[in-house]
Image (cartoon, rainbow, N blue to C red; front, side, top):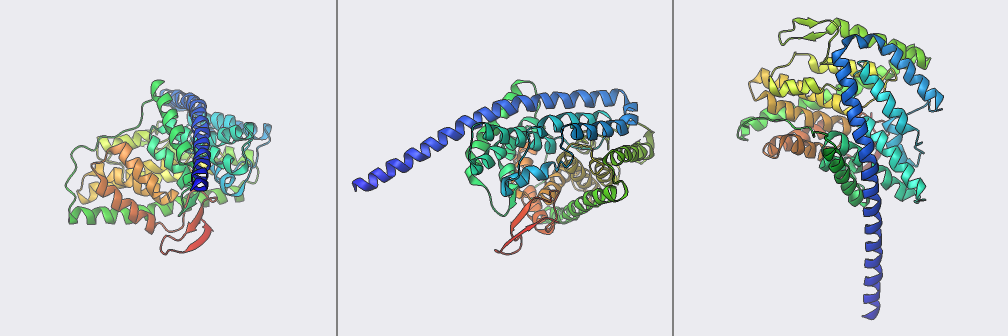
Length: 433
């Protein structure tokens, strides 16, 4: 009996000590990365406003690409693998250099200033992961604890930038290895995400949210419609992954030199912008060089899906092409917000065609396409709850479940591992297509 009590006290003391350790370092990470995240948030706002005010900045995009390649060369980070390196560091112990943080910070701002089509949350994952890894090294954490610090940093940066702490806390644990969750990181990821979110809000960052209006009742008919949309969104997510990976191979095949690749990519995005421009719902041209729909993150196009309930029919495809042309050329940013944009535009189009709440279909499309490209169904569901509220729960639930299954083993990140099959209780341990 006495031995049992001693054993319990020892175990509980270890658990308490470990909990306090992670609470302390999660708060530290949340504060530090929260302030870095808010600096990035306002930097993004500034360059986005400048690009909107001076649309001719698009013509400097090739020069911006050359500057980005030069920066990475100057800091000896030419073989940067971006978010893939962060994921690899968690399951294969690759080193994340601290210089990744300032590089991705500056390079993403350059990309957006000159009209490249990219996101910000992918950059946040790299920013948070590199700072989290540096903190782990500074305090001499062992290898496994360093992995937790990387996930902690990823959650903090994602939460500070996008304003979804619940999804941010889970995403870094879920995205690394599909089929399992790194629950050892739960406490630090949750606390870091909440602390970073609190700092961002107190500094004036406005969390993203969208109003869907009055939702229709969930019936067998609406369930079937959402199911069809989910299957189509899974195909869209596969198409997006294929376009991104194919564009990367295309650039590397035709433009061996990184400087030439970036310059050529900038010219291609300019040509696409001049060709497409901004269009009205009926497809009529509004402007030659002010394509705010497809340059940048695409948040304006997402908002349009919810406020106007209409979208240019191939807007989702154009956003894919613009994003692939930008990122594959070596410009920096992320794929997550463009993914939301693609999903919202496709969902809105589907809703308009079948006569079923375009705004709800846009919300479902965002969650379903995000799930398809990241293979992260729980995060996708939580993002829908935080952005759109809980009222549409059955729609999001069925759409994300179907999209997860029907999207197969495709994914944005080549370093992501599919540990367990999507179709059987079977260990497969393979990488995404």
